[in-house]
Image (cartoon, rainbow, N blue to C red):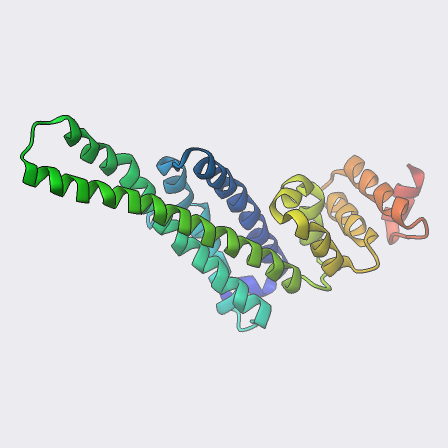
Length: 249
């Protein structure tokens, strides 16, 4: 596994970023729901986390991060912190899922006792137990806040980790094909991400994406990517057959 990752590191890095964006999008929906209704969807969180025999997207992201940043022997400070942060996101999400389960299945059962004829002693205990459900909601809010902060820090760490990686073709292709979800995920840090990777040569994103699209046999899309590169830098040139193809268009 470690050997494969070393040989295909840029692809694996792309996959980690891709899963991070997809995870962020799904959890942001839950954060909005929590803010608006005070509830979370347990089925959504369960699907996102998964179980050992059927790991969800978030679990797979955590495992990929561990393989990438721990098992290859090529760790960096930014990579190590990113691995820590993504792992922490997974475990905070586990707690959030458990709280959502309790609110969905246990809170209604305790409330059902409110209309029953019970002794004063049981009524007092019922009030104390009902308060526990309220504390669980408070826990959900705290966990959601921690997760949102962890996602903010992760975005900054991705910027640092990918700094100067303008030659990474898998990264450029992902950013080109998925600009909408990357923008939504990185929010105000989106410009910082592009600046970190491409510096004063933003056309490199489109150059590398054009090569990747051409390698995939998607010539028309490659031509459009090359045109986007030349719109930023009319002097850009392409190697070999690519130059003739892009000039012909």
